[in-house]
Length: 195
Image (cartoon, rainbow, N blue to C red; front, top):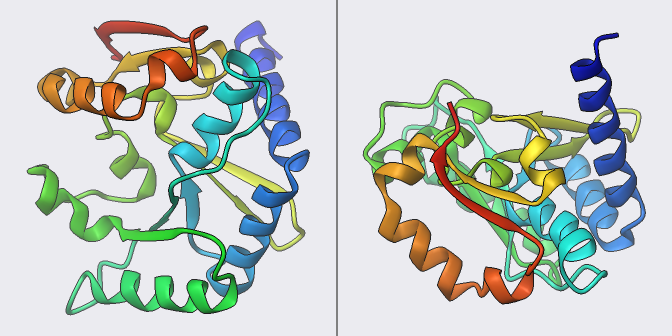
């Protein structure tokens, strides 16, 4: 295996170990596997865990929401599948702040071309370390999907994507409103885009 392939494999193993060690996140993933095995949990669910532990307080903090991604391009009303799934998840686990988004409609909100799949949708997010999703497979093992790899996430690098460069005020507002600089003082903020 090449050094790059070995590093990627180690990063995946490290991420899986962090998630496996978090009982709350594993409960979220188990609920999602039972109700919607096709869906992915992404964004702060992963980024915050890694950065809280590695670059912040040393332990995971509670989340404002759990971002669940689906891709239902067949729905007559693209918002309907997310509303139905969010209601079902909330009935199953009402203590979890579910936020389901059908990526088949999100391009409209963002002014992009239609997304081909979940990974393509995440490639339009503002920063690379957020474009990562996980779910449990049928055997209960963690699967990872990523638009830009795990390097920036695991290294504590907030790197802009092309979309982030195109919407710098939106990214600056996100960083400020969520208190990322004070929450993760060890994270490096870069202003160049990921190719």
